[in-house]
Length: 531
Image 1 (cartoon, rainbow, N blue to C red):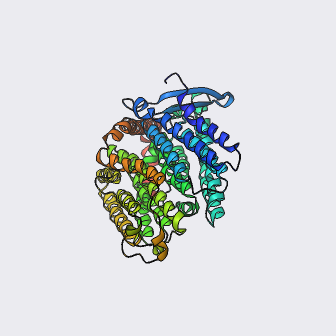
Image 2: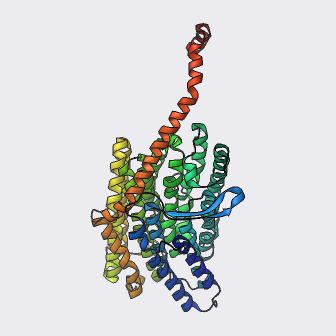
Image 3: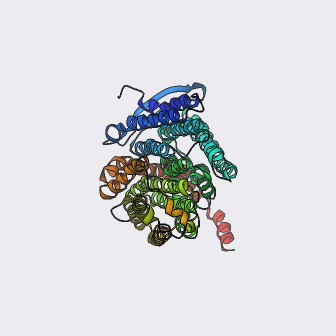
């Protein structure tokens, strides 16, 4: 395994599968579904060694692959994996398989193109997580836009074109600024070492003046904050979720939003530590506002899918707050929140998709009394809803608990205000569940609903297993991510101290000259200051 270009195979196998799906006969719907499912299952199985062979016991990058790509620019095809990217890659392959199984019968129009785009999107997401060259990272980051744009724009709801264009423009706006910052890093690295490169680990060693750090950090942060999405850059998400097909919503919630928090953790924070110190309080408060705002807006939504979309804004606020706490508990809580949100919110979107296929409506007022008609569906809905709320014993609890613990260690007001988001989350989720599942059957159409099929139960089984596994025994997940998180935290702190010391040394000669200047020169300055 170690001798193979394993990461490249993980990235390009789904792309090859997508090409094969795309050239199959358009009317061969059943073979297309089977081939897409087998390809996604094979990719997931092939990624499982990330759990036991790559992650444990080492904080640095493993299974690195490095080849010259554009030598004149110093750009390389450089891939690597560590505890953070490994877990997110596993989440990607798992979610793609679940999304394809969930779309087995719901996609009838252009099924060939649909499943090809889902597999191509998987390749782009994995490439983004594995890239250690910033130019290559940017290529994969932008490449993800095209499949998701088409999934929303072609297979979405009535306002699908508007939602797709809005998603595309928001992401592109942030990406352009990030590209400018990447090119600036390349020029500074060339001036510093004489060797042009886009290598991330070389950029980690690049000393940057605080003023340069600030604008570069803001450029990266803007791109990543849109993807998270953070308040007030979140407005594309509800439209994208509501209009996207179920499989698109599952992948968008489970994986694509994590690209933003991953970008902060991998790039923005360790590359620009001094700027992080300046900006962290403001970002933290924006995250807290997002937690409360997302929960309050979710509470008044009449549409099931839009309610879950705004709950994502609230939950991803917790992930960002954990990062800005800048301690071990906050980092671990942020990473657990990313994984938990991917499982629970992905399951919620699947549940909404299942009932929409049967009833062709997502309005909460159109349901009621489902417990009597579809009991298996209702039990699964109950478990997933409680995991999203953060009930102890489910996966949602440990992430929110660690985030609040990390926030409390950094700032009591942060933790106090963010904790209200937990209460509000219980309010809107329980109220929604009560109106949809409990009570009498108020609409005759609901009496004819059929319960989950064998395929649908098969889709939800691994999600329920993960909900309880991560809730009851989260330590295996924490063990795999903690060495990498500790390394990122230590590297960020070390770089901040190094650059602060370097900046102080650079200003020391100026300070000594000012101290040696005649007193008469200082007097007018003091008088001017008094005025």
